[in-house]
Image (cartoon, rainbow, N blue to C red):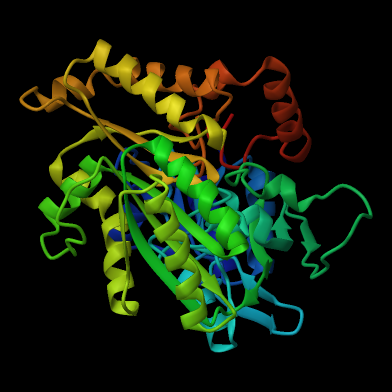
Length: 471
């Protein structure tokens, strides 16, 4: 390790007085992950203001063999942006790099610094009559660089795809300090390997994303949000197929929520809308948008849902009467995680499955868990339309919470082994980080792991870029 004081002095020369965080409380905030599962001790928290400053900083760290931990909005759920406790890693925050570089409403693209927040991008494109459909929370904190590094998904993947599908070009500072300028707005470019895809979803282990060209879409003129009561996840799959057949690509989002999810939200958020007088085993929250007028879209959706009820697919539905009511419906879904936290700790899993297998997976895995841990509660919700479930397991009523949480390895083994049997993934949209680094060794083939390690060795031979994450 080089002389710390000399290294810090050189870092300060590169980023200036505003680029080196010295306040202890701010340093601690950056060094603590979103769930407070991991707490690190960085050598320094550095906030460069430009790509050139990032490159100079990385070159300095490469020469001295100093590890770098890139960080966006520090909203990682797997500890991907948290340094270790050695005091030898530089935490590189992109928060000061928040310029919108260009917006092209004709080509439907926006070029931004990686430190722009998702909310900032959404607001800018909305003023131009366009839509950037990536939708994850908290949008006012989540930064574009972090969204890309984790290949963020969210509620509109069904129609628009995840971050990987919404990116045309990248600017990346490599572990050598070289700047790769791949900020292309092309929709078609078959001139070689698609290099940008190496860095999307790599969680900062192959380089630092400093800029991006993102796809935009026409801003919808009409939107319908509905809540549907269902008997089972299998009925949810039938409804998804029915709506795709009747409404086509207008279907933006299809979220599935179990009865216990609704109960927890209504308990801990008593101002939430109580949409139905009768409770149901499952609920689907759906959103459809179109460029046609509101009345026409509403007639289409209402007709499709009436047919679903008449055909026995759904039990009941309610259409939001206006935007305020639509936000209320969405709050039922978006407050699930906070309601869970208020209820107590639970064992969380972010998984994806082939969509057609979801009902069978739930039947089998729920039964296995109840057999192993009688009385256990499954708090299951997620993006049914793209196969991504948040499969969370809560302790049985009356059982000691801490004692149940100590059983996390056994619970997770049942869940992840079941996911693997169904051809799914143990990491859907939250990534691997340091939380699941050991788990992927159980489910990825030795060849897959060696290919990933070979790519890491090629781009980052010193292993200085976000070490201890993913691999």
